[in-house]
Image: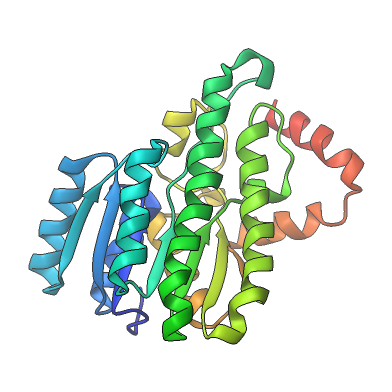
Length: 260
């Protein structure tokens, strides 16, 4: 659980469930006010009411589908025009399971729009005020899949690889402006991701799983400590180290066999 306040006002995308909800809860407990963004307004309203009641925080609800450019533009404007958000948590994202050619191109494009395009545009909007104030932070959520070219999750894994590379480069660009940028790469986490992605993880042993609360706590601690990349959970850290020893030409085949 977050022990200290790291932002006056944090905007969290994908805040209605899973890791995003855990981020919002821990930030509120640490003393931050919030702007909550997700598609499901009912869930957002319920979370906002709880956080106001339990922690006495100011909570703003902005329902939006980040794949819709007009709705995304409203969130960009909220970041750019009000100059008060000093932490952006780019958490929204999802995947589709299936062979790339068997999925519709719309399914693949949707992942790119949400996982990459929205993340980039929101980061750009947030930096306009953060650089002027010479303070602030951006926390991007990637995945352990960022390091694993993944047959049947090809587009999802590729979008998360983009997020890691983008974060590393962006951090170098803005660190002299007083802005911190970090990326968290969770392993298997008990959220709605698997159900939405139609990814059967039932055969995985219990010890590989993390809770959203664990992921959020590690990620916020990493940002506070100005660490650029955090692989959450012992199993994920070990896997990242092992994969780093495998020739890149062999990784996709290895992951494909593991998936089967």
